[in-house]
Length: 132
Image (cartoon, rainbow, N blue to C red):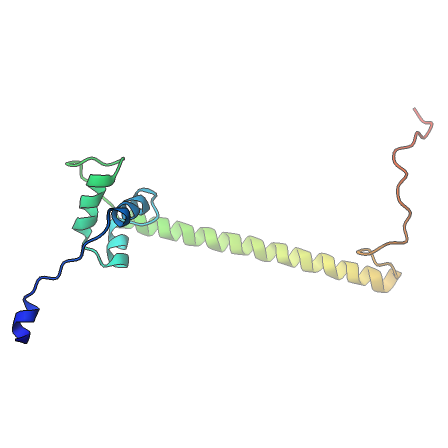
């Protein structure tokens, strides 16, 4: 009896909304067809069929070619951009730490809390100095 169960064809049906979402992910450049195929466990040909059916950018009988090297290059570019941004954030954090240390030293040496200096008089605005 088990032998007969293994011969039963298993089909999955996807909603039109799901198919359109997959096509939208592809068209936005977020994922390649192969990435979508692996991510959702869908055969890549089904995804191409959906692209031809639901896409506004691709027409049937026009072949969509994805270069593996281009997606790899895009990924490497994004990774390098992330490293660059992390480096910039690190430099800004060092600058903030430096300024906070300077404020602390000013407070200890001069006895003035620059962050919370409530003893200063308020400005009276722009007064005429008599100079022209």
